[in-house]
Amino acid sequence: MIVRWETDHDYVLIHIHQDMFGDWIFSRAWGQIGTQFGGLEHRLADTLGQAQMWLDDEATIQRSRGFDKVLDVDAETPEGRQAMRQLSLLDEG
Image (tube, rainbow, N blue to C red; front, side, top):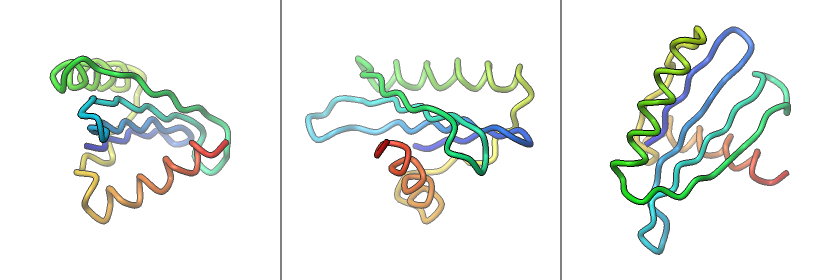
């Protein structure tokens, strides 16, 4: 699952996925649109439910900050694969 919020200048992207060991990973990327300023963090969730709870919390926070949800897709869709390419660029630094 990939969810992205944006304002005119900033973005937040969440990716929830299961790794090869069966663990649930909650990845959060944020930054300024069109720049390399931002960050990336990964958190290990005990369950998918916990990761989804973190996503719900993130949605509440971003709405309160004036961000609009612009993407909510499965990672296997074309839009999801494009978002993953952007996320992997952040992970290289």
